[in-house]
Image 1 (cartoon, rainbow, N blue to C red):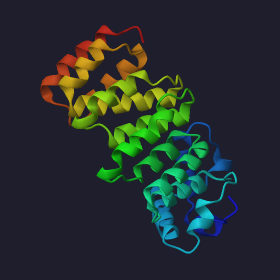
Image 2: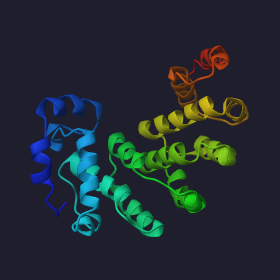
Image 3: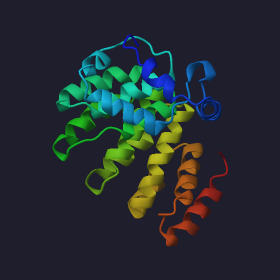
Length: 235
């Protein structure tokens, strides 16, 4: 990006951490990562969101050299004082910069939504939920997980997740993750939806697996999910 973050990032870089973390983010190599930890990136992003440089960063559309630059850009979008519609514009402009799961999930975790804006946010997400591209679709699914695994919109959320068309691994994993959260929070409704709605076997089994890994899963549900997973061995 044209706004030079490197003087702020380089003192925070840890080569040993870079060599470890880059293995967890497919598609990146050590030439694209400095090795700055997420808490430090969040702290820096929040500082910049309060600075006089905030719009220089928000309006910068040049490609990033380093993963950490992209993460900070996302943190600024979530932390800056913006009107809701303005924030949506910056979120939309950021989506093309999401090329891996780590940027996507860190970005989404830094966003917030007031109850009054929830319907507009759901409308904003719709294009990403019918997108066949891997990372825009992952963004949509993770946003559903963060904001819409709720009793008052559960049916719509489950339908959107099981209908999401993107075939890429990161998109399917996000669907499985969101469905697992729904299984933990709303087991009866989610199981009923999965019984009557087609879903590819791989995503289905991953959703059951991730739900079984959760310590919040109701004890009575565990044997049932294990049985359902065993019955879908075609994945």
